[in-house]
Amino acid sequence: MNASGTIICISAHPLIKLNSPFACFFVTYIQASYMLLKLGLYTALLNTLLLRAMAQQVELATVDQLEHRFAEGSDTTYIVNFWATWCSPCVDELPHFEKFGQAYKDEAVKILLVSLDARSKLRTNVIPFIQKVQLHNEVLLLNETNQQEYIDRISPDWSGSLPATLFINKGKQLRRLQEKEFTYDQLVTIYRSLK
Amino acid sequence: MRSLLMLSLLMLGLIARAQVTGYQVGDVVTDFNLKNVDNKNVSLASFPNAKGYIVIFGCNTCPVSRGYENRMVALQQQFAAKGYPVIMINPNDPEAQQGEAFEDMQQHYKKSSLTFPYLEDPGQVVTRRFGALRTPHVFVLQKNNKGVVVSYIGAIDNDPDNDNASRINYVQNAVNALMAGKQPEPSLTKAVGCGVKSKRG
Image (cartoon, rainbow over all chains, first blue to last red; front, side, top):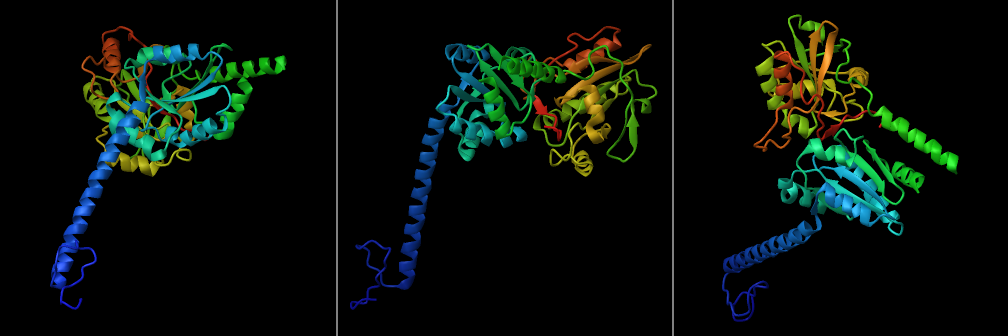
């Protein structure tokens, strides 16, 4: 309380004169609520923008588009991991692909994480998952519906079980599919054996 | 260096071969005797009046398998009385995948709508014999003069997300074909599912 009997309310606007502790508490409460609301709105807005940016990063890809990409980069070994947010062993092995991607970023090897989640789950499951676990490798969502066709086109050795990883290098005529969960060391070993 | 390459190529061939072991269409099935969630053992011989069987490898933890449970129950309702009962076997090693132990199976069974035997497979012996690779993975069997013969291997239908208006019900069609004295066409389908978990990786 100052000399004139007005309560100094630290959070209140200088133009608002307050003369009771209750009023001070009330004003502070309203202001705090308003600021929280604003913070919430800004966060939501930021999230929406980020989500939109992320959504652009998860492109849809057909098998034809994948094949085109392998052919274009024929000097590159592509390690194509087929996964899904609902597949727990896939989720468990993703960090190994992340570590590998970082460790070998200067070599002619490229990791593609191809999600087999349903297209309708892109915004609701896939993108939130990518944000949560912070994936840095390129993520694609397979834009195919006919499993009888696309599983064999990716590899006749594939039964369709997840996780599955395709090692492909067009220049070396390499195309090998492995239906298993990899450790980091196994990834390194298999990559070195292919070089 | 070249011989090393040849050796690794040879090993790759062996690995690729190892992936396709298990029953093929036309093979005669050896009976099994596995513990059901009610603690009583079940074998193919437990169904003396059966004309065949719908053996489904399914589990507690795989969302794809769980997503198909209502359709499995529908198959049981449609075909058990006609001589083709559904038998589900859990192919996962509980030591390799949490939530797949026998007690978990019992709990899952109680909570689910499943109406048919749900069997454990200790040591994954039957799983390997069938060559089950994922959940769900279906083997339609038919009794004939050779024994119990594999007639169809693959998916229940081509609609994992339950949103395909032009769904093809592979298993339903296969059993209907068998009941009409024909062979299923297709007799082999593929589908995306959860890989069978085993300790050997």
